[in-house]
Image (cartoon, rainbow, N blue to C red; front, side, top):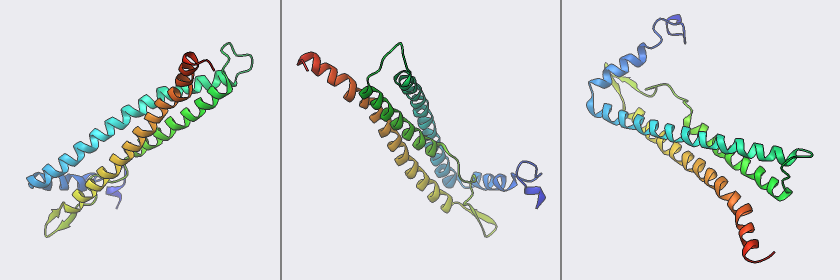
Length: 170
């Protein structure tokens, strides 16, 4: 029992090692699992990039809200713009939560591989990875949608009304 304890067990990685060795002997399963993990890697990197973009805009919205809330601010911000910045901050924060749910790791590597007749069965792992890819693709789409809404929201609340007032006096 102590040999498989996390971080300190002397045989804590042997299970994954045996599965990887068996996977090398099964080229079709290896190709399928490699492809699934490469897609998960792509989703992970896209979500990480979107998370970085969200962080920049959350910081900018935070600075804007800080000027809006400050008394005797050097840069006076109207209430309608301050409220719009709060909504923008919320949109980017929700997008970031979806990005975190795409990036998270919540399973053991090759955890659904079962021992069968002296070998290993990889079908359940492949199905699970396909489900994870589908779920995370949808979560990434939601994150991207909230970020897009966060980018469009200031244009709808700040830019277009100002342009309309410039074209047609308010």
